Length: 121
Image 1 (tube, rainbow, N blue to C red):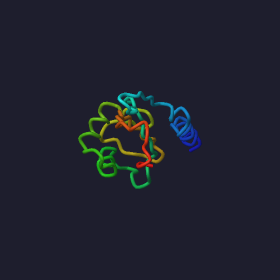
Image 2 (cartoon, rainbow, N blue to C red; image 1 turned 180 degrees about the vertical axis):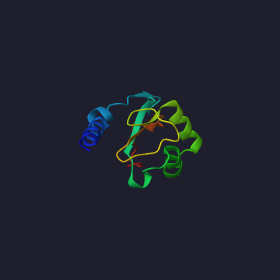
Image 3 (cartoon, rainbow, N blue to C red; image 1 turned 30 degrees about the vertical axis):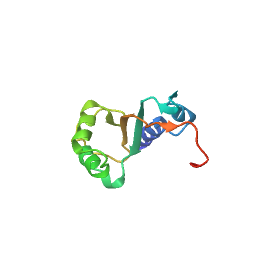
Image 4 (cartoon, rainbow, N blue to C red; image 1 turned 90 degrees about the horizontal axis):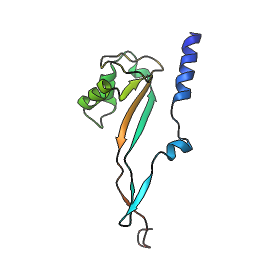
């Protein structure tokens, strides 16, 4: 039991938070009066919820995170961009208490204007 607590603490210590480093991970450029953000990678992390314990990772993602179809989550699990405790797993992996789920995505941000008129404020 004690060893499990140490492992959980170690995982929590690795979990990315909202630090200055996180906010500085993006950079932008100005083009034709528009501020554009360069595409970048972002890691979503969460710990296993109680209702997910003993369920397949693919079933949980397909049901709980409906932004993408199940086939996309299956591809991410197989490619290793969706991991458990920073380890690649099979699509049939049964989630356990305190498993750290991490999903790396490539983000593209739409442009925004660099100046505002009095009418938009």
